[in-house]
Structures are given as C-alpha cells and as structure tokens.
Image (cartoon, rainbow, N blue to C red):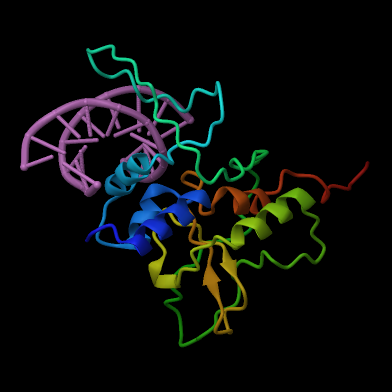
Amino acid sequence: MPWNDERVELLKKMWGEGQSASQIAKELGGVTRNAVIGKVHRLGLSNRSGSGGPATSAGSADTKSEVRPETKATKTVSKSAPKPAPKPEMTSDPAPAATQPSRIKAIIPAGQPLPPQPSANEIDPEALAKVNEIEKKARKLTLMELTERTCKWPVGDPATPNFWFCGLPVQSGKPYCEAHVGVAFQPMSSRRDRKR
DNA sequence: CCCTGATTCGC
DNA sequence: GCGAATCAGG
C-alpha cells in the first residue's frame, strides 16, 4: 500500500483531528500504526508544540548523545488538544454495558443504559459539552464491533437504524471513553436528602 | 495489561 | 522513503 496523495491527506486530516496513530492505521488499512507514525514524522507534522514545550519525552534511548536539530515544519497549526478536566468518580455503574440477551426471544430487551436521557438527572454542562464534542469523532461502531476496550456508550435509539456505540478508546478498564465516563459516573451529589 | 507517540536502522 | 522493532511513558 503506497502513500497515495489521498491516503496522505486522510492521514493529515485525522492526525490534525487528534486521532491516534492506531486509529488512523485502522482507517487507512494495510498499514500499522508504526507506519502511520513513521509517515507522520517524515511529513514533519509530529508535534504542534510551538516552543519550549518538551513533548512527551521518548528520545534519549541510545548510547549516542546526538543532538536533534528538529526539522521544524510549519504546517497546519491546528488547535492543541483540548484540556480535559478530569473529575471522574466512582459510585455505581449506572449504565451496564451491552450484553448478550440470552433470554427469551425479546428483540429489544429493556433495562439497558439510558444515558442521553436527562430526566431527573443533572450532569455538569461541561461534561455534556464534552460528550457532544467527542460524539462527532465517535467511531460509531456496531454492537459486534465493540471490543473490551472500546467505549460502549450507546447513542441513539436501539430501535432505530442510526444507533451506534461511541467506540472511542476507553479510559482504562472502564467501559467508556473519558468523556462518557464523565457523564456516566456521577460523583455523588443530589440524591441525598434524609435529614434526621 | 492496555495504550500512546518517538526513534532507530535495515531494507 | 518505508516501517518493524524498539524505546519511553501513561
């Protein structure tokens, strides 16, 4: 698979969007994430750190202490990665991951997560905004495409053709990506009255 | 363990 | 130029 102009463009686009090398590799197909990273570097669009900012170190792994002049490439200076405001908390798992029914011939078993359903639920506006943001980038996976480490946040109505799962990389062990973890796991406010 | 990007170096 | 192997970190 050669690096066609189109493929390179897609690479640039996705990289600019902040997509990970592995995701880009999957999207392109026929290449590994290493290939993607290698190409990214060759193209010169590796970091968008303007100045002084030591990127996530990784160098200096060789006996030779050689200086790397760093080929500055003034390319598309996209906005830096958004600054996440992590404030995850653990409480209970309000949204069980999708599971195989294995029960009767119920096509649409109820009792699944009902996240985008702010009824008596109050979620941080920021968290919601973040969700909206990332849903644009969602990989929109189907149930079968989900793996143990893809965000299982459902979007849309299961009884609707346009129903999909977020599919972005999960935070860590958790069933959702960072953004969705943010809204799925509420700290623990409200829901506490009982003075006496 | 999973993942991320960075670098090296034989091809 | 390419990318697998490796490295370094989260």
